[in-house]
Length: 551
Ligand SMILES: Cc1cc2nc3c(=O)[nH]c(=O)nc-3n(C[C@H](O)[C@H](O)[C@H](O)COP(=O)(O)OP(=O)(O)OC[C@H]3O[C@@H](n4cnc5c(N)ncnc54)[C@H](O)[C@@H]3O)c2cc1C
Image (tube, protein in one colour):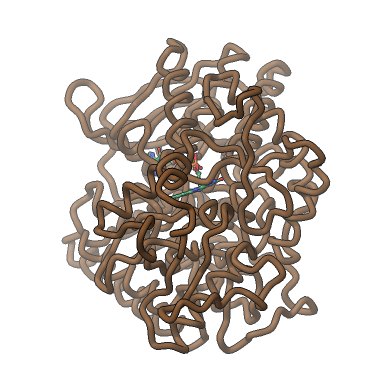
């Protein structure tokens, strides 16, 4: 049984060779690279081209570019952060192809910070034993990468760009091979409303799912749509329980919701300290790298201090940097703090953990192929096996680049071998898929509250049972509306709410199932890592009644 979002039948059709969903580092890199093989590409994106997490990335991109550093050392640090669940082949691919991928990004036009001799400046971040993080504009790395890639795709007439287009579901041919997708375009003219794109292959690069939680560093578009679509299409997703909470997100008050400003790890990399209200450095003695311990360790330590002291946040102290360093090295963070009435030059920065990165996602092989033929995934929406139970800082932009290039290489090779024919969409099968009930727009905030309360940094069987029951109740309400013949009106807000609901339900099911503490999954009731039972992945698919089932 396959499922689809409740939506009107497509009123228009477009055709291309490769349709790419999402315009972050991953999606745009696929589009640019399939063009080299002469294939036409269409990039479909939910908002503007530069809306997505890529533009917000601050710290940088990790690659063994420095003197004395090697891919082998980068591999070691990545495996340690991944807490026993990384796929070593995937990591080896990442770290060996990474330096070349960064150089190719520079050739596309991305300008990284350099010293007077033209050497790329490298900084350190948590979990890295070397300076290997290349950055741009001080702390505006993602904005520069996005600027360069957007300029490159805009100047290629073989890449068609459709903005303000929410992709709904996958279309397949009679053999079950991906053959296109349905989407809703907010616009006027020939492509207004729900339509269909026919393609020889489909690439999902829809980014993360941070919006399933109340407080997140992710932008509003990160609603997990790609994972929800893949589940409905019958694909396997994996490692959903491993959500990385960034330890140092600017704390804006107890009621703050939605995207929150990040205070990059690079601030600690350059020597800022984590302190409590009394000024005590609590990371010293907890880990050999102190404030630069892997993110899960720091997020847990902050959460523990907050609980022990009954505090809502801890502090970051970077006053010793002085005004000049703040202005030159961290201009974005300085401006964002000052916009909220905090001056890091003279005062402490209040920080608390918030949802940041989905280490899991749609399961792929090393060529970015999912378990549905012709459907590819890369970037944050994918689970290539690189991150294991916890992503090493600044490996995500690199993963997006490297695996996007590999997808393009696979499509290029298939095309050359005559293995990328045009596909005819099985329209009857597409419409006969079971329509999944939509949720009212207000459900979004309720899902976020349930998830933050019960499936956040610290989890237990009881907290997750309460969250699962709350989510199930929302689902029952939505189904009841459907039975009454009054489904929530199909539109962007209700489609996104349905996607958030499905992804949240799948995430909680996996997190409840994993009865151990590992990487960024922290169980209060199972505080130890349990390799004997749990050094394995949970793979989730939808059951016959549409419920996510982790196995
Ligand atoms: C504040 C912040 C700081 C970060 N700092 C770093 C860092 O320093 N280093 C690092 O390596 N990583 C960092 N990350 C993580 C990194 O930025 C992301 O993992 C990476 O950019 C993801 O790239 P992507 O191309 O997969 O997705 P995104 O850049 O998130 O792009 C996803 C795209 O998909 C589109 N989309 C989503 N759903 C749909 C749909 N249904 N239909 C059509 N389009 C859709 C979106 O509009 C968007 O264009 C940071 C993340 C955040 C939020």
